[in-house]
Image (cartoon, rainbow, N blue to C red; front, side):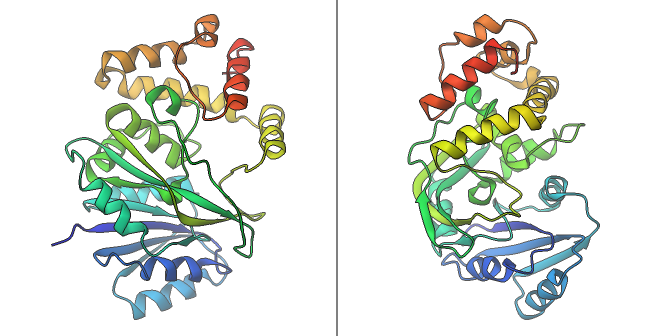
Amino acid sequence: MTERITVILSAYNGEKYIQSQIDSILNQTYDNFILYIRDDGSTDGTRKILKQYSEKDSRVKVQYGENIGYVKSFFKMLSEVNSEYIAFSDQDDIWLPEKLSVAQAALSQKNKSVPLMWASNIYICDEKMNVISIGARKRMSNFSNSLFMCNTQGMTMIINNKAREKVVSNLPKQNIMYHDWWIYRVVSAFGEVIFDSDPYVKYRRHDKNESDISYNFVNKVTNMMNRLINSDMYIRTKKETQEFKIIFDSQLSQSNRDVLSLFASPKRKIQKVFYSGRFKNSVLDELVLRLFFLLDIL
């Protein structure tokens, strides 16, 4: 018997694209899955669409809730499911038919007694799903890297139940920025991240995306500067690293504890600047990060 996968999807005012996303999930070649959707207080036609799907397909389970934001919504669903594997879905992308099958085959070969995450590359598309580019073929995955970036996007991620248990039993008290980044940190610290360089998601970019990604040099630099000037992202990143230390420090290996101690410290900026490990996938990102260490931004 094949292993059960639960796909969790947090929906909010997604009537324009959500049917395409749901159809792409229901058309997966892997057949042992359920699609658990939580409507996060939609005020458009999303609830009507979800009701129609749940009535015609027994694999679709829907919960209607108040608006709590997509991060809390995903963690709520994660705490309520129980499957061998849990996949995360946004409401406006399209999955390739083989995604779940490829992920399950890769995860089933690994040590299930530790937290595991599988994630794939993406096709970056415009609003009409015309392919613009493909994400980076190589992604760096290690614990120090996870403190300053998530090396993939939530809608590509599939975790095992051991990872789910580790996350939901150690949720932070403060609100965190991104559910996928926090989960990536946890799995990087205690288990294994598997990155498939082949794309299995068509990622739709439009002006209402909840997540953020840059696919060229100019956009990447612009986003960095906007975050520095207009956002509290870097302040929150520091706080979340400190929160991670409070929750997990005693559970970490000595090497990961040493890394966390260094980067959770408000001091030791020279040691941070000249840290021997690599954090970012690109040289530009790496240089900017080291500059931020020097300026005490991170």
